[in-house]
Length: 175
Image (cartoon, rainbow, N blue to C red; front, side, top):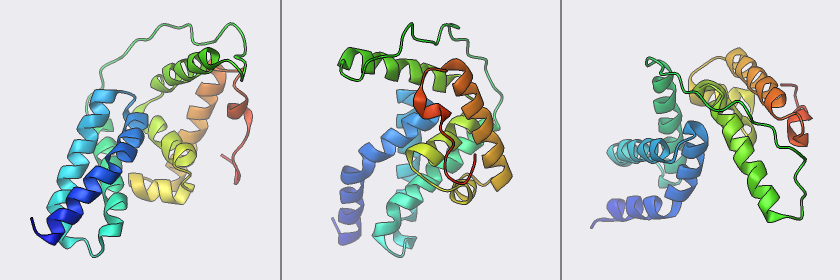
């Protein structure tokens, strides 16, 4: 194995888990996330010799993931119906791990009601802490699209989960 292949193998071993986390948040499905990461890693491997610095490989792979996810938005949609009961009966306590797990599941379920585009901007803006401009560049959309989709997603989440404190705070720089 030459040095470039060894670098690529090290990249895959060290960064796949982080890529899977982001892909899962983008897709809302473990199997789709794995497919998305596999596609990103395959494209990254094909471009490996063209990358100027291996340190940029993760950024390249993430951009590939976001672009692949955007292309899925353009495909015909199949409606997915989820049960309407999203609100927990009470605000979970911070001390009980079971309550925290329930809260995570309720939040996950609410995130799955968002469109793929809305989920992508929420992941980029709040999970990966990108600016609106960075998110727009990664997704290949305008900044106003990112702002609109973020606002709609947060409004939807606030409607479904009125008790979650984190959703009532406005991020710096507005929506």
